[in-house]
Length: 124
Image (cartoon, rainbow, N blue to C red; front, side):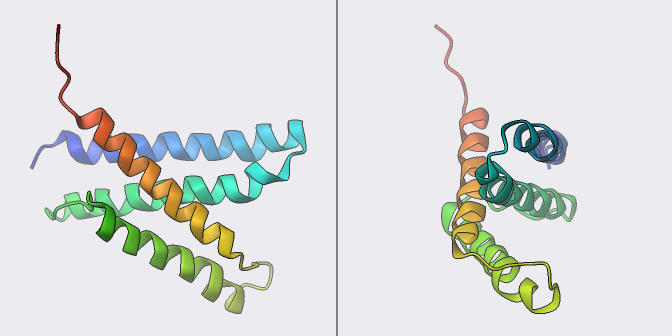
């Protein structure tokens, strides 16, 4: 196993967490724009969920989810649980089907970014 892979997922997770904090405590209060607070946080959560899962899989010496279908199934499962089951036990939580889409898109955006960064570069 390439030792840099878990570190790359950890670095991506730290970056996403930093973007979440920037969104939550700077962008939203300064602009008053609620869209980044709601759907933006779910978008970032999708990427963070995939980083966390892939980091754990790599630590367990398993292959990370790098294909669209398995990653999509995982993300949609997480999003559906988060939006449909969590409101049943957490009174302040509200289910929103658009958030499931935001989680899915965030995870796929991370997957696309990972692919683009991992692609070999050609020198001219």
